[in-house]
Length: 281
Image 1 (cartoon, helix red, strand yellow):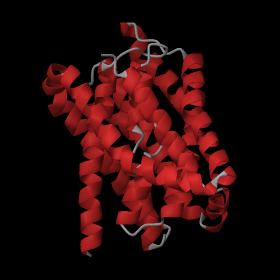
Image 2 (cartoon, one colour):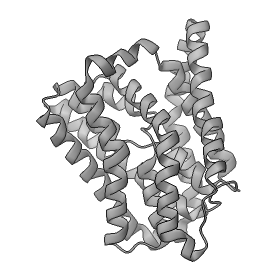
Image 3 (cartoon, rainbow, N blue to C red):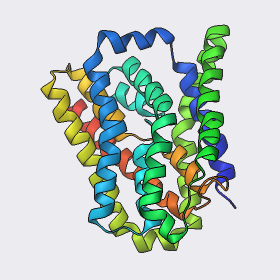
Image 4 (spheres, rainbow, N blue to C red):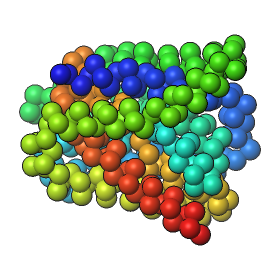
């Protein structure tokens, strides 16, 4: 079974749910609270890819894993971040806004960074990136469902609220199903590389959220905003990374998606621990 036919509808549903929960007035937070937004976007859009590139070079990752690690680092925030922010006592509206902003901005930054990374390590071993196909797939699977969700939210608010509650409950189980199927299909490759790749994705998450948390304190963000920044920076859209890596229109490599699978597992573990610590305080 090709996992692309599982991940595509999951990704579409997740982005549609983001649109359902998004209120255009939430973007006013960008002007009212610029520092939390600036720190979070810096951590996601600049810091994450830089750390991934550094770790890939440091650990001499094979090109397919190197690109997979950079790919998950270039993706926008995960759709479950608002749930984690709520559990941690963070700013849920800010979380939704940040996820939406990063989803739009990475439509432009992801192709640029991945095109450069592919030329750096991929083309010498036959890995190429059809940038046009990447942009088209992201517009169809990322932007269109979000816009549709926004339209439904304002046209039929009650129906949108009910749908949002249902999809929010389904988000994590669907991602878990995807990870399980992927693990069954690629068990040997994952087990053979879990030590090195597990170390890389764990270091990526901890360094990104650690530096972002420090920056958030330096600019004196409020505690609720700091918690949201940590969660937004640490939680990436693994479904999008898997869709890009495994899509026959782009990389066509399910092996390249393995870093995203491991990242998804580790980010949930690390952020659940973070939520537990914050709630304990």
